[in-house]
Amino acid sequence: MLENWDVVVVGGGPAGAAAAIRAKQLRPDARVLLADKADFPRDKACGDGIAAHGREELALLGVPGLIDDYRPARGLSVVSPGGARVTAAVARPNHVVPRTVFDARLVDAARARGVEVRRHRVRALTLHDDHVVLDGALSARTVVAADGANSAVRRLIGVPPAPDRHTAIAVRGYADVPADDDVQFIAMQKDGWPAYAWSFPVGDGTANVGFGMMLPRLRATGRPGREVLHGRLAELLPDLPTRDLRAHHLPLSPGRPRPGAGRVLLAGDAASLINPLTGEGIYYALLSGRLAGEAAAEAGADPLAAYRRKLRGALGRHLRTTDVLARAAQSPGFIDAAIATAARHKEVFDLLVDVGLGAGTVPAPIALTVARRWLWNGLRRG
Image (tube, rainbow, N blue to C red; front, side, top):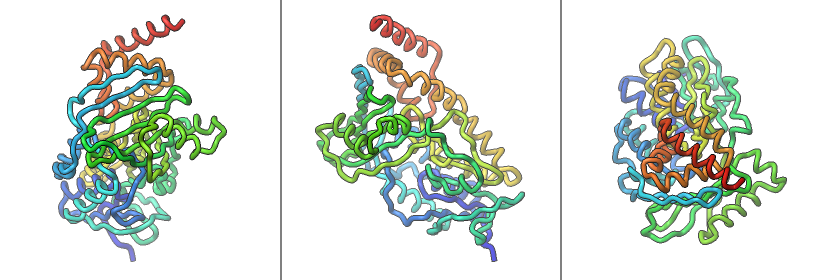
């Protein structure tokens, strides 16, 4: 006996919860199941940052006040690999909400809207022309796979994971900071670049702190990952003794992520939707989850084609931009030039935030300004 569902969402993080909520928004009569291998609340290693772009997605999902009780972070300070620094107020404040809290609230919001939430680990999947069968027990017209960087569903439908060259690894913990600290801080490291540490104040006297670098660069050190990641975090943030350290992989966007197969749609980390410049993933997760939920609810005949079009329209130019910039950013000098330019021109600072935390693109005049400084810096060093 199969349980029949209109939509089964696998994974209860931001992407999965957004997909389930959106499907119910558009089709209140739809049978929607949200399945996760864990009970909520549960921790998830992450930078916990929710930019203004993510709050816009929450508003579209009908939960605009979900994180209103968390104090916004209004400042951002960045130190480049070569020591250039910019500190400024962001155009729109960001928030830092531990995933233990944020994810559980989103799942509760889905449940309150009629989504059934169930603990279930997917181990088998069969694709059919007009439905998908999970574990021989669940049948769905559409499946949204939002089960993270190590997605079991992605593996079952034969979509390969992100290659190592597009994979970062980070360690995240928490530290005590002054209660009035509301400036997010990023310290980049030239050794093993791309690599950086961060401190993102939550607003309650603690901060999410961590360090991340590309997986091939970590392996090239020939040292244990724990030793490298923990050591560099302590080196870059020596005044912030850190607890609750956990490591996690980040499959970075390659510019043209594969959105699924058959009637299975990949969203969030499962689709390698993580900003390759910053490692930001919550905005991409909420956006892609919402679009997957829309496609599942509206496009019964071919949800994957509808989802692909929606993703292309929302993120196509942006992902191509970040792909090009990520290639340029392999040179730490490019980042030095970008940060130095941002320190002199507020519009460049705002643009970098929009590209790094949202869906921004880079106008040609600004790209030319940064390129000129990059060239000038190179000539001076030469």
